[in-house]
Length: 403
Ligand SMILES: Cc1cc2nc3c(=O)[nH]c(=O)nc-3n(C[C@H](O)[C@H](O)[C@H](O)COP(=O)(O)OP(=O)(O)OC[C@H]3O[C@@H](n4cnc5c(N)ncnc54)[C@H](O)[C@@H]3O)c2cc1C
Image (cartoon, rainbow, N blue to C red):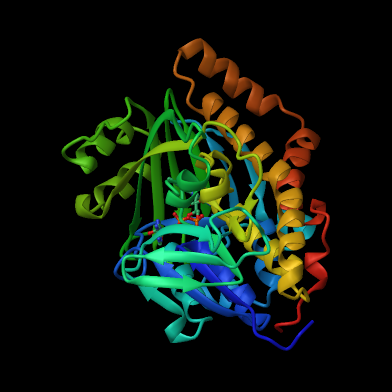
């Protein structure tokens, strides 16, 4: 490899873009991140990081627990609105099997911790990337890409499109792609301050066309979320009143948690995924990751985890390559990531259909099936998620050079 420093421009300072930027920076790349928003994302929600994402972070030497103050719940599982458990797992057993239990972190803390891993001048806020084209206007990987923004142009050896679910760069380069499709469900999220009792277990409760999730965070805060089958664009005037109406009679501690909600702090998003997979995740020297590449519904809690996996696998494949080797590394990235992420996109949508069932007979059959599913089948499904970093054809885990 030549001693010339390679330069990457990242579009988007979300979880995926920042993880890629940190991973490349630690491997000696010069990194510039362009973020459309005028300041760091202050998303008032939690995110659950499954063991596959924790292992990916570990492989780039990023200690998420120390950085973001994560909390591992004692148990996690599925409940019915009357409080009965449908499934319950001890997180100690997950730690024994996967090396760690899922960790719940506040998104803001995670974004802050990743940002702190970059030089201050690396992130340009309020700079939206409007287009990326090769200098000669083709997909020729021999050509350096030009990144255009309202405030000027950058050239780079590599451009990473981490511009999220609505990815303008996906639309620019795949104009015939059908884009997003609505899942039929909307979701509310908020984080409650640490001024009340926090549950020890994380649980999702499945009703009829409605779900409610409770996730304890570090420092006593509680991340709560809810989903409901609703027409796209449905926006109740008072989200707290809506949540109380829908979930106020469910099991403890849900009613008490709902009473503590600040309506102004409730986020609502309709849940979408990509209507079809992208044919590949690279074009010339432009590469997509995270929701920009494979937006999925949050039913498996893997959208962010896959963005982290993408970023780490990409950085690993680029490791040791010179500029001429970048196109080969991007082809290897597409080969490593497309099948896994698309299978999860499809599985997540299917899981959502089952969780959102509303007819009483269908709900009774579903709940019975959840309770009756043999542990080995549940475990196989979990293995597929949590051991994902073992399945990609690169030895990411062996790389801990940044430590
Ligand atoms: C209700 C809900 C719950 C979820 N729970 C979980 C969970 O528990 N675990 C999990 O793993 N995942 C979860 N997810 C999914 C997860 O939030 C996403 O998959 C993840 O945030 C994707 O990260 P990203 O970096 O690809 O995109 P984003 O986080 O969306 O970041 C994209 C960034 O790009 C910026 N941007 C957009 N356009 C441009 C442009 N033209 N130029 C420059 N910047 C631009 C945006 O401002 C944004 O900052 C959940 C999602 C939802 C909706």
